[in-house]
Image 1 (tube, helix red, strand yellow):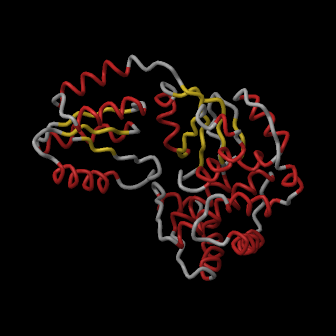
Image 2 (cartoon, rainbow, N blue to C red):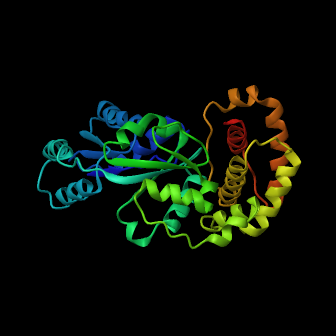
Image 3 (cartoon, rainbow, N blue to C red):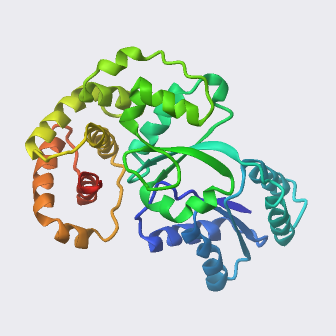
Length: 318
């Protein structure tokens, strides 16, 4: 059986919790035929070995497979043409037969849940339709990309990274707000050999809050971007934190909008080593904590300490 679990947007959640969840599901789906585990990052690779050692369920783990290969694996499982080890050996050989890389753009943010998805929507919006099938957009987060970038390069030829934090990779970085600018779009399209066709010139004269509103309208589902921008503007005034660039300010505003959308939907995120981080930034934490409590009241929701820490992380990231 195939168990496919994508952890890309869940950075920071306790490994033990996810292993327990995986273990329970594996036991429920196992039919004494073994389990083929398709994973997308190295830290999940040990799940299969651990499961086999603890319970004795035959497990094989495959990472970073291509879509065509995944489809072929599913076909083999559905039609029961091979046993687990035969399928596994087929995969190891087939991985070597898919060397062609697809042009791709990285869509990146701190958590993988907010600005990264906004960046994805913006990229899809500005790309000519004829390039939608030729270019992949890979959404991930700042922490995971540090560990799995080289693995992702096996299957993707990355030409740029777009988001709210520079991962310092060997490809050009575009802050998400810059893709609202016509000149920046020209540079972006040159990188992917696309013909530039800017039909959004009216957006170039918008102020930073209007740009943020337009970006949020492409992503949020539970939030009124127009009202949220007004509240976020009050938040920015309340904290009065010096932000050195317009791009960074725009990134923070968009992140705040995505945060509110998450909190309204009660979609929690987690921050690693949170107590240590709070202790190291206690003065700033208290200020942000007080300001977000006021913000949360307007939406009848709660904003947890993890969200506050991500705000601080963005403020303090150069």
